Amino acid sequence: MADSRTMLPPPSAAPATSTIDTGRTRLATRLTFFAAGFAMACWAPVVPFAKANVGVSDGQLGLLLLCIGAGSIIAMPVTGWVSAQFGGKPMILAGGFGLVALLPVLAVVGDPFLLAATLLGFGASLGAIDVAMNVHAVEVEKAAEGPLMSGFHAMFSLGGFAGAGGITLLLSNGVSPLPGVLCGSAIVLAAILVAWPRLLTVQGGSPPAFVAPRGIVLLLAALAAVSFLVEGAILDWSALLLLGRDLVDPAQSGLGYTLFSIAMTIGRLTGDRVVRALGNRQTLLWGGLLTVAGFFLLLAMEGMAALAGFGLIGLGTANIVPVLFSQAGRQAGMPAGLAVAAVTTIGYAGVLAGPAVIGFVSHVSSLSIAFWLLAGLMALVPLCSRHAARA
Image 1 (cartoon, helix red, strand yellow):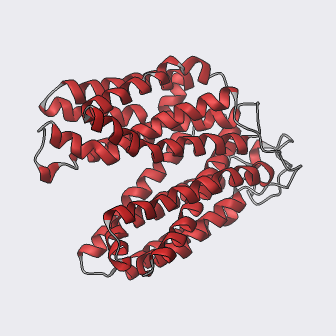
Image 2 (cartoon, rainbow, N blue to C red):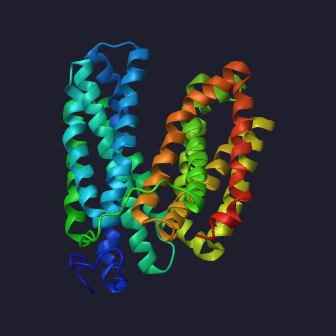
Image 3 (cartoon, rainbow, N blue to C red):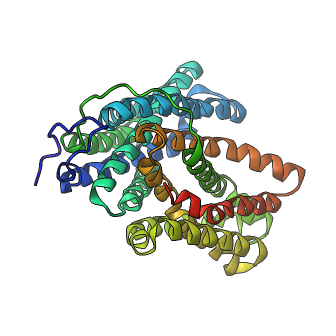
């Protein structure tokens, strides 16, 4: 079996697939996705401690947390340019080592301005590894000539479960935040170090010019933004929706997101087989329809039927984003690295804007109306599935 460290031809050339899709490169890609999800999730349980360390209000903390998004938005286009020329490996390593170094700082920094700077760097590291690992995954999947992207994204979800659960377990057993996140950083570091020699190495070609997303790339990015918007809305607003409709007790308000997350993880673990059987168009079509049906159950039904809507939404959205990334890497309108960066950046903008948009709509009408609007936006995925699958 060929060693993935062998220098590959420039991206403009047609490399031998035997040097790209190997057990080593698949393992490296899975480890990278796991490390990114794990590192991001390690931060969530530490947020209250970071807030106490710097002594800010909830509103001030919200402004500080925007630095994560700002850092990601800045890093993503740059990562796309670098990845289009050199492949994903350099920015995977830069982002991964950045997460390892900055995660412990978040647990101890005591000045709001230093926390803002650290969060900006943490967000930039997340943005860099997010784009670069998807570029790397696209290259491996194209060489495999079969769907792999859903399985890669499943590792991100599993990393998120492991990171949040592990840090929460340590904190609940009396471990202070710094030792806890140091353990998390050590796990991320181990994953990156194991992946490092197995990542694809690409020779530099001519530097690609920055190209504004257009045509099929713009469509893929818009659909990704809708899907990310739905995921962000379920994360931020599902508990309030359940409480507002008197579907659960306050102690059970997290049940909706838990069901959504479990269903999404199952959907991604089985997603490659689903995409292989149905194809990209049918996966987008039925994924979108299943998501819309989930919103209908959630908003129109009562009791367990409404809660089952979260499961349908998780299953429906599970493989939409992986397929969109695959399509972005296969289109011929712009370099794959820049296309994946555009889809990631615009999609991530949906996550950033989502909470504010949902909050505004719920303020002028109701939270249920805001979720009905999400269902309407999600209907764009099956409506555009034919065109999106032409990439």
